[in-house]
Image 1 (cartoon, rainbow, N blue to C red):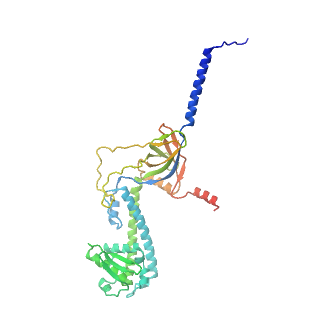
Image 2 (cartoon, helix red, strand yellow):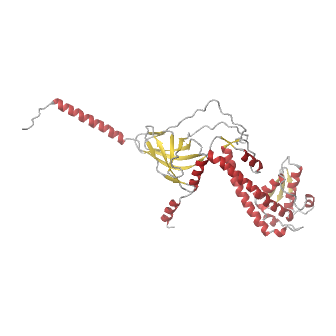
Image 3 (tube, rainbow, N blue to C red):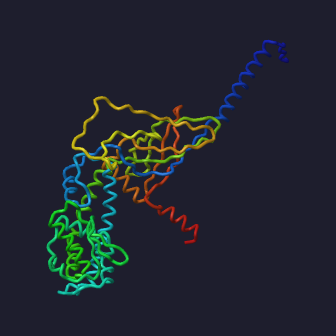
Length: 401
């Protein structure tokens, strides 16, 4: 029996309203989906960055700096960037001293017969000597004379004064200058130098200008003896500085946030590095967006702009204000942002990260959170001090090597 359904305006109207609501709502959500933000993250670089804090130096390092001729003596607390600057200086000094030792050892091995009574050099002999062509050697010899660290050369000042000069020697306000034809070799004398220091520096200058090979041979042997000890001291200070700098360092990261969608997106200021290395697994590092124009902490600075150390630290009674910076990425745009870890690395974690970085094996991704609470990760990437073995193999294969 056929099912005869009667026509009902009510049924038609209700059906039309439901269809309109569904199509309208669906269209809205489709529109929203098509115009949504489409974020992506690319890690551009990762590395170690310093701190703006005072660090407790410790008695062993203070004692070593008092013994090191290349650094000032430290106080109980020193600024991170001052210690970092000193470390870089010691790296240069270490390199210069090693090259100086090598140069002098080679020269002595070829000129041991010059340590003969009465032997003199020519101007060309002088130009070939480490004391004249290597600034680090001359600076070290002058420094040891000022500190009165070595004995007396074979020929005394009174004896050398009677020797004929093979090149001109001039005394000016700042010290002695030996005419090396192509340049002037300076032997500086401080205005308030002691009597013994002045005589020692004059003896050095006259030994060069007279070509006194016996004395010059003596200075080179003393350089070897004193510089070997000095190099050990520089290396000891370097090790102690590393033990202070690495735990106080932070991880810095340059990251490109891009949005290929038609709606803006906001990233919260706190993010995390998720390490994929076994040594660091389960130990994420919290980072924060840095301000582009962050104000530097007020410091006690000397007239030359270098931060001074201090014997004590006095904390403020009230905590300092801490700001947070959200990152706004407009539609179809990219923004590069600098991130830095909130807390210092600490000794143990810092050593693990540094070892992986030097082995070109530090593997990590960045975990971020949008303003709406969406988790957005970057790709997992590998970073290191130089090109990784895998990348080198790819390049070698591509270039046919």
